[in-house]
Amino acid sequence: MEKGLLIVLSGPSGVGKGTVRQELFKDTSLNLAYSISMTTRQPRYNEQDGVDYFFVSQDEFEKKIKNDELLEYAQFVGNYYGTPRSYVEQLLNEGKNVVLEIEVQGALQVMKKCPYALTVFLVPPSFEELEKRIRGRSTEKEEVIQERLAKASKEIATKDEYKYVVVNDEVLLAKEKIAEIIRENLLKKSQ
Ligand code: 5GP
Image (cartoon, rainbow, N blue to C red; front, side, top):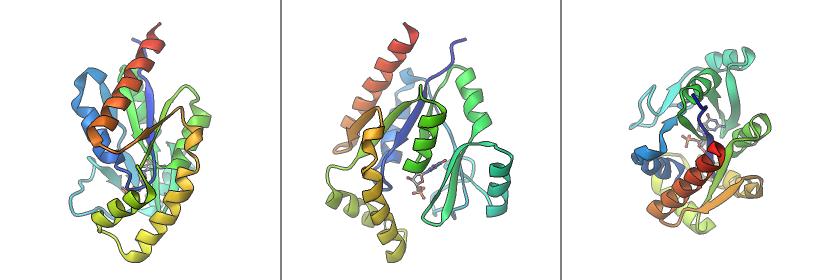
């Protein structure tokens, strides 16, 4: 069976990667599978272990790093986030197109390790809009919000490293652009 396509969806925190990803997953013709990340962050009230993330302790996470069980990982605003490698490989071998929804440091690691990966960077229509979205989520303290904003502007500066940059002005439009990019790349891959 032909291996699936590895897809990296990145972009600054608050740009709406999660929402766009959820829309993409409604399109079953894309044959997508989501790589559930591991994190040491506390779950938000609406998050479920094993669905949104695998929530683990710092010790557990550091063991995974030591045993080289992560395809990539990063520290983001005081917590670890990473992609369990074996699950991604299993899904790719099953022919699934696997989506990693990850921040920039991790995305840069995947580009190095897997240069064939399809990499998409989602940008906000403006920085003001991004700030509004991050504040709108308002699950964090001001200090964390400030940290996320400072981080976002550094993250946006890496956008040229990606194969595609898509503006998330309107979720369904952004989703359709990415779906088109995926279809194009699946076609290229099968030729
Ligand atoms: P949040 O705390 O808002 O869920 O996530 C913070 C950031 O970490 C987001 O940009 C999110 O995409 C990213 N992230 C989630 N999972 C992973 C992962 O496995 N690896 C990396 N490098 N970043 C991740």
